[in-house]
Image 1 (spheres, one colour):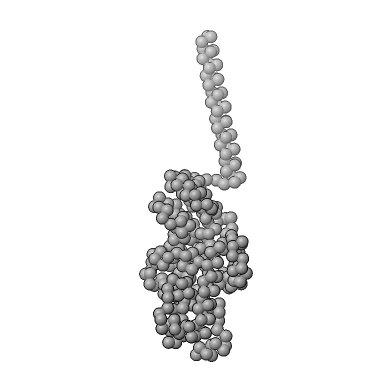
Image 2 (spheres, each protein chain N blue to C red; image 1 turned 120 degrees about the horizontal axis):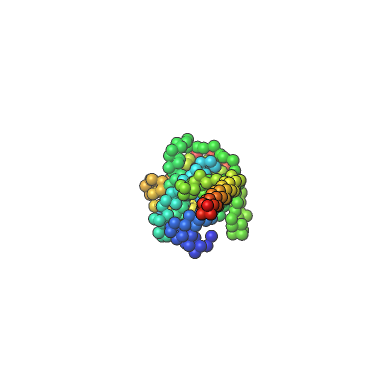
Length: 119
Length: 191
């Protein structure tokens, strides 16, 4: 058996889930080159497994982008930061103005009613 | 994140609690981004894949039965999205090496001896992975780093299980050849 024929099998068995055929196993037992190759595969697999604990660090924009695409449709175009604050203040001011105007109208009506009752 | 906490968030998110799903995103997006980057090999593309992943996860959350861990479920969706994305992108087999986006180790205390021995190898490996053709890279990343079973990998990539295995062995072989190039003497012996 040639080392080249066995090479891909070594890649397959390195994780321990499969076994070599008996012919291949006899070859590896007697072949330093294939033994070295198998050891390299095992080292490679350990290194690959160790990558699982490594995380890339995305910038903060990514989280904002993800959350933006997930927001319910009604809030997708929600304003952010200063604009949102300005919009809230504007809304409160508009509501206060409307309330004040309403109160003036009611007061004027009441005054008119009193005048007409007195007359 | 604790499993019980994740389970709670999932249940709340399934019941329509949008903030609970946002919490799940916050807890998992770095992991999802890392996998996406390892699969597509480009920062901007990885960002697109991550957004698509969470959109699909959000839509499909009610179908998540908890048979697998939430992270594994997300990995499968990410793999599927990346595969779709790569299919659309139709790049050449070999992609240019991108800039290093910065790597943080979340478990620095784990396996100190092993870490000392393979620290350099890991850096070389990260480069070697990105140099693989995307089809080979996807299988080795999903199987050997993220421990997804062949069946699941085949399903997400739209290939047969045997094709997934062949790709895996080819990918491992290429990585080994790149990381451990034969010396001149060995090359001469190999001819």
